Image 1 (cartoon, helix red, strand yellow):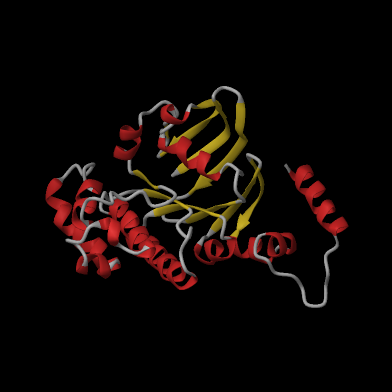
Image 2: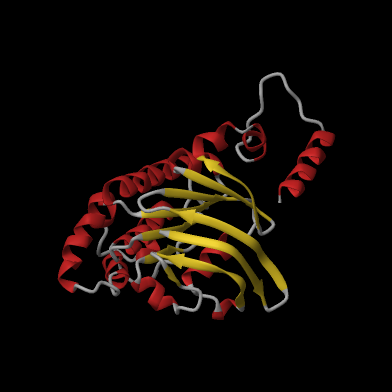
Length: 264
């Protein structure tokens, strides 16, 4: 469905942010894009969404293809109309509007307005708390409820692909678990493809089918989620897991960093 090939981008025509990355999101699948702060994860989805002018972000090389069509030069509203929706980092809901009004705004791209009521009830099925609080100002929701609203706002637009940017950010572990379970249900029941950008590799790989590890603007590793979860380096440096009775020295860490540079 989504295919990125050798994508290079720069900020202000100076800072090289993405250095020839390639990745794919097949239909109905969840693909995780993992990495630390500054790895280029948000830049990747901002580039896909087309919101480059306001960020002084330029595509220097490579292609972004969606449903067989190159979308490098399309405007954000055109990309949304094709079925690509982004849930930005920090949720970015309209805090001075009600929950209901936020959901209505999310539906503006629906071609058939008569389906709105059905779509609204669908999102309330996944997020019943939002139905209970539909007349409440969105700014008074908890962090987890705001994240649910941001996802609901995207889902009501009947997307083909939803790009989630750090949905676990700033949320309690139990809330994160609940939201990720709902994301997995949406993918399974509505057949919506999902590109999941996360630092929390453990929770992301628990629901994703495939994953890419991004570091310093390059894809350094990729594979099926189970394969990545069992990889010793990823278990230690991304999942925080070590084998019982083993200790890692700083020398080992430096060796790992050299290996990463070699892989990139």
